[in-house]
Image 1 (cartoon, one colour):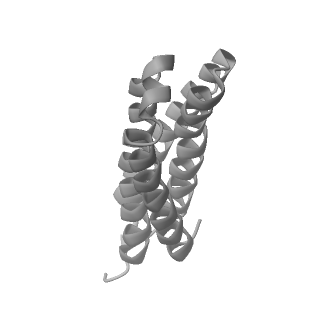
Image 2 (cartoon, one colour):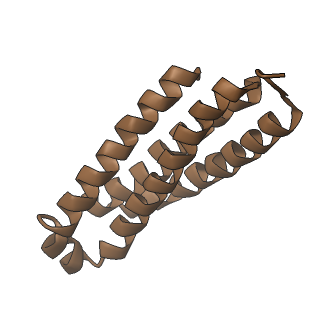
Length: 129
Protein backbone atom coordinates (compact mmCIF):
# COMPACT_ATOMS: atom_id res chain seq x y z
CA UNK A 1 0.00 0.00 0.00
CA UNK A 2 1.54 3.31 -1.03
CA UNK A 3 1.78 6.41 1.15
CA UNK A 4 -1.33 8.17 -0.15
CA UNK A 5 -3.49 5.05 0.05
CA UNK A 6 -2.30 4.34 3.59
CA UNK A 7 -3.16 7.85 4.75
CA UNK A 8 -6.54 7.85 2.99
CA UNK A 9 -7.35 4.42 4.42
CA UNK A 10 -6.33 5.67 7.87
CA UNK A 11 -8.60 8.69 7.50
CA UNK A 12 -11.52 6.47 6.49
CA UNK A 13 -10.99 3.95 9.30
CA UNK A 14 -10.61 6.81 11.78
CA UNK A 15 -13.84 8.40 10.61
CA UNK A 16 -15.63 5.06 10.86
CA UNK A 17 -14.23 4.43 14.34
CA UNK A 18 -15.63 7.75 15.56
CA UNK A 19 -19.00 7.09 13.91
CA UNK A 20 -19.24 3.51 15.20
CA UNK A 21 -18.07 4.52 18.66
CA UNK A 22 -20.68 7.27 18.90
CA UNK A 23 -23.40 5.05 17.44
CA UNK A 24 -22.50 2.28 19.89
CA UNK A 25 -22.41 4.61 22.88
CA UNK A 26 -25.81 6.06 22.12
CA UNK A 27 -28.14 4.27 19.70
CA UNK A 28 -26.81 0.73 20.19
CA UNK A 29 -26.01 0.85 23.91
CA UNK A 30 -29.29 -0.74 25.11
CA UNK A 31 -28.97 -3.60 22.59
CA UNK A 32 -25.28 -4.11 23.42
CA UNK A 33 -25.99 -4.13 27.16
CA UNK A 34 -28.86 -6.59 26.72
CA UNK A 35 -26.71 -8.96 24.66
CA UNK A 36 -23.70 -8.54 26.97
CA UNK A 37 -21.60 -7.29 24.05
CA UNK A 38 -20.86 -3.70 25.10
CA UNK A 39 -17.27 -4.51 26.13
CA UNK A 40 -16.73 -6.44 22.90
CA UNK A 41 -17.95 -3.48 20.86
CA UNK A 42 -15.75 -1.07 22.81
CA UNK A 43 -12.73 -3.35 22.28
CA UNK A 44 -13.40 -3.36 18.52
CA UNK A 45 -13.57 0.45 18.42
CA UNK A 46 -10.46 0.84 20.60
CA UNK A 47 -8.32 -1.48 18.46
CA UNK A 48 -9.63 0.16 15.31
CA UNK A 49 -8.47 3.53 16.66
CA UNK A 50 -5.05 2.23 17.73
CA UNK A 51 -4.38 0.72 14.35
CA UNK A 52 -5.82 3.67 12.47
CA UNK A 53 -3.11 5.76 14.15
CA UNK A 54 -0.52 3.12 13.25
CA UNK A 55 -1.74 3.18 9.64
CA UNK A 56 -1.51 6.98 9.49
CA UNK A 57 1.98 6.87 10.99
CA UNK A 58 3.03 4.21 8.49
CA UNK A 59 1.80 6.38 5.62
CA UNK A 60 3.75 9.36 6.93
CA UNK A 61 6.83 7.18 7.54
CA UNK A 62 6.79 6.22 3.85
CA UNK A 63 7.67 9.84 3.05
CA UNK A 64 10.74 9.55 5.26
CA UNK A 65 11.95 6.01 4.62
CA UNK A 66 12.20 3.92 1.48
CA UNK A 67 11.01 0.44 2.31
CA UNK A 68 8.67 -2.16 0.88
CA UNK A 69 8.20 -3.34 4.46
CA UNK A 70 6.32 -0.13 5.25
CA UNK A 71 3.90 -0.74 2.40
CA UNK A 72 3.31 -4.27 3.67
CA UNK A 73 2.93 -2.96 7.22
CA UNK A 74 0.06 -0.71 6.08
CA UNK A 75 -1.62 -3.72 4.46
CA UNK A 76 -1.23 -5.68 7.71
CA UNK A 77 -2.81 -2.91 9.76
CA UNK A 78 -5.68 -2.52 7.27
CA UNK A 79 -6.46 -6.23 7.07
CA UNK A 80 -6.06 -6.47 10.84
CA UNK A 81 -8.70 -3.77 11.33
CA UNK A 82 -11.04 -5.56 8.92
CA UNK A 83 -10.62 -8.98 10.51
CA UNK A 84 -10.16 -8.07 14.19
CA UNK A 85 -12.55 -5.18 14.62
CA UNK A 86 -14.81 -6.28 11.79
CA UNK A 87 -15.34 -9.74 13.27
CA UNK A 88 -16.09 -8.25 16.68
CA UNK A 89 -18.60 -5.79 15.21
CA UNK A 90 -20.25 -8.63 13.30
CA UNK A 91 -20.34 -10.74 16.46
CA UNK A 92 -22.07 -7.90 18.33
CA UNK A 93 -24.69 -7.40 15.61
CA UNK A 94 -25.38 -11.00 14.67
CA UNK A 95 -24.59 -12.99 17.80
CA UNK A 96 -22.85 -15.63 15.67
CA UNK A 97 -20.22 -16.88 18.10
CA UNK A 98 -18.19 -18.58 15.33
CA UNK A 99 -17.09 -15.08 14.24
CA UNK A 100 -14.86 -14.97 17.33
CA UNK A 101 -12.58 -17.47 15.55
CA UNK A 102 -11.74 -14.81 12.92
CA UNK A 103 -10.67 -12.24 15.52
CA UNK A 104 -7.27 -13.81 16.34
CA UNK A 105 -6.34 -13.73 12.64
CA UNK A 106 -6.79 -9.96 12.76
CA UNK A 107 -4.65 -9.86 15.90
CA UNK A 108 -1.89 -11.77 14.12
CA UNK A 109 -2.06 -9.29 11.24
CA UNK A 110 -1.70 -6.43 13.74
CA UNK A 111 1.43 -8.06 15.16
CA UNK A 112 2.80 -8.62 11.66
CA UNK A 113 2.03 -4.98 10.80
CA UNK A 114 4.00 -3.78 13.82
CA UNK A 115 6.89 -6.15 13.03
CA UNK A 116 7.02 -4.97 9.43
CA UNK A 117 6.95 -1.35 10.60
CA UNK A 118 9.92 -2.06 12.87
CA UNK A 119 11.85 -3.84 10.13
CA UNK A 120 10.91 -1.23 7.53
CA UNK A 121 12.22 1.68 9.52
CA UNK A 122 15.17 -0.24 10.95
CA UNK A 123 16.49 -1.47 7.61
CA UNK A 124 15.61 1.43 5.36
CA UNK A 125 17.49 4.43 4.16
CA UNK A 126 16.05 7.84 4.83
CA UNK A 127 14.88 9.87 1.83
CA UNK A 128 16.82 12.79 3.25
CA UNK A 129 20.07 10.88 3.32
